[in-house]
Image (cartoon, rainbow, N blue to C red; front, side, top):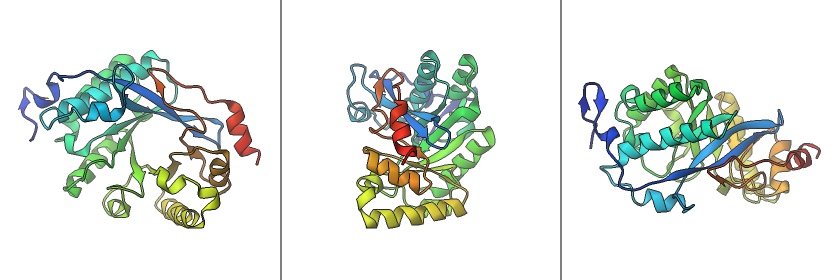
Length: 256
């Protein structure tokens, strides 16, 4: 199903969704600066239901409109909450027919609330298989030109694997929690992450460790020079709010 343009606007992107949703936010900390690097916007039901409860309602006909609505809702809510960090938003590559046309609603809301485009990060999600790699490359390059940052989410599992880097040049790789869980005591995970870190450095790509849940995991990552962390150790996602990160959590890691 493609986009149908009328007067330069995509009809499918303007569809009314038959369900409601909202957002939760989880911080990404930067241990090098001691500040927040970004907040990731996470889809939730209006009563706090899981992301899956919302995503399971998205049909093929709703895909374009849902992707657009997520971006708009995330930016609006981040602005209302007074977010001062970057904002990271998941996007569905298969829901972007033509990057510059399908981004119009995002640009409009960013301009309306005064959100800088350089403070937007779009995360390529791993929950769908992208069959047209050339199209995905085109999306990423167009986003680069428009001033957005791009991250490859859940790297190391699902569809977010090494082969994507043959055609993509993202700003960030988000290491999936399967690589991070217990990494302080797991030599196999340590080997995999060290080699990924070396590769990312050579390609000039930043790393974010997802799923950091313990002080020991955070310390190991920090000691390896991986400074950007996201996970329950620092803060759980907050429903329609910005969670606070206890400075003691950061100092406990960096003092090691």
